[in-house]
Amino acid sequence: MGFFVLDFCVGRKEVMKSPKNNDNSNINDDIAVALGYDAKSMTAPSVLAAGKGHVAHKIIDTARQNNIPVEQDPMLAEALNQLEIGQEIPAELYKVVAEILVFIMETNRNYISSQK
Image (cartoon, rainbow, N blue to C red; front, side):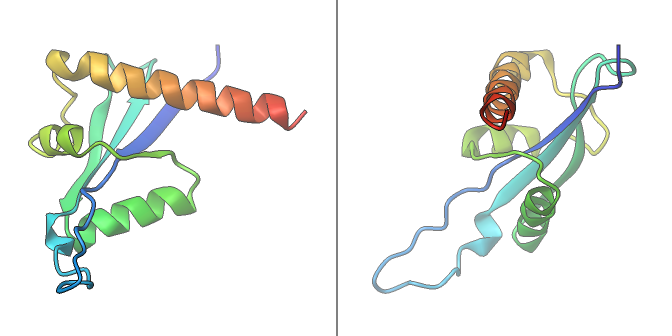
């Protein structure tokens, strides 16, 4: 079997815009968490990067520039943001993270099939 690594960012809270506040003044509420997983050396995905505000935007921008899938899930981002860099995700988050991984893999598989 080959080496398998999957990284993804769990997306940011959406910035609320109103007629009185049409700028990105809530940028500091944004959260991003990048996870990595190597089936050969890890028992669960672990946190590669996490941050709020401008750091969150940098994580998301870097992911997109490197074609790493970005999933928007504010509640999961909040939960994962409580973990330390390098820490594996806790068992209670396995199911929701697994669902995201399956979705990403299916999307990638469908994209590759459509390119043939």
